Figure 1 (tube, rainbow, N blue to C red):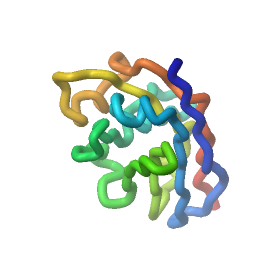
Figure 2 (cartoon, one colour):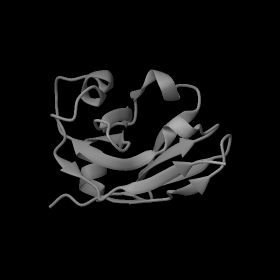
Figure 3 (tube, rainbow, N blue to C red):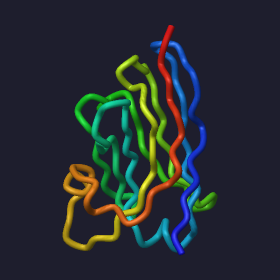
Figure 4 (cartoon, rainbow, N blue to C red):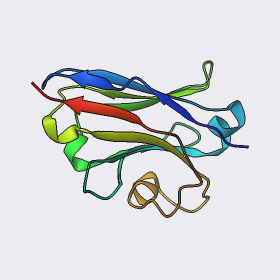
Length: 129
């Protein structure tokens, strides 16, 4: 069974930083691409950043490019999303998710929620002064 547990959300001022963590199984980390998606109130869930199972390819949505960094730590079975220079428009519930595909790029799997196999429970990120 695939299980994902997010943590690291909270309240931060604009310009601040947070690091989100997604704890996964060793099998999941090695065989699934992992994506971070977010959903703001009244908005559709959107892909923020995704990383391949090998860790060799990553994608960032344009609005977070240069501010967010996705990474994998195989020793800790964890995927991270480092979020810097946070803006109020980053406020949302952030979800990690698994995607098991063999013929899609990280950009493609981040462009839709239709390929997601499993979702975490989400962690709230609020950026406000």
